[in-house]
Amino acid sequence: MKNKQQDIPQEKRKVPNAKVRSLWIAGWLITATVLLVLFWPDSKETLPSNLSASQPKMESKKTVPAGQDRLLGRWVRSDGGYVIEIREATSDGKLDAAYFNPNPINVGKSEWQLKDEKLIVVVELRDVNYPGSLYTLEFRDAEKRMVGTYYQAVEGTTFDVEFAREN
Image (cartoon, rainbow, N blue to C red; front, side, top):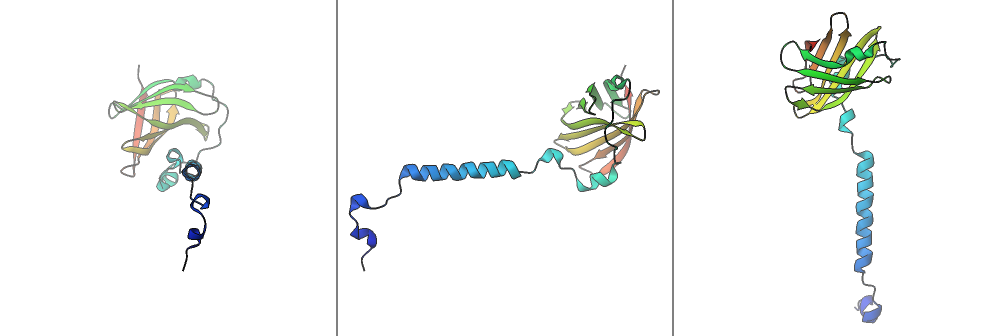
């Protein structure tokens, strides 16, 4: 039995062109890359499932309380050299904050919120050994302190903590 390709002269046989193959491969690679970018989970927004149950629900953001600049500065935790440095507080509830233990630890998200007319500072850590650890602190202006909890994500435990303004 003869192969149909053998009936066609050599110069007229359909042989895949290297250029066409390259275009197909490039097309598939581009498509795969686009799909990965669109559907890859964003780790910054993914929190442990038990975090939402252990943390208080926050009210929607309101205008910045008068004197929010009182949040600005370095705050030192009472049980060690842990420091939250707040550099800016914007009217939309965002904070520019840094965290040190004593070296810098990446801050994934930091914000202020109002809850029951209290100013709450939330600082989420996103770094090695800090995969979503979270400070939720009430600002107590008269005492120059921030008091609240620290959710330690690696251990899955919550601790009571207190920060005092560094002079």
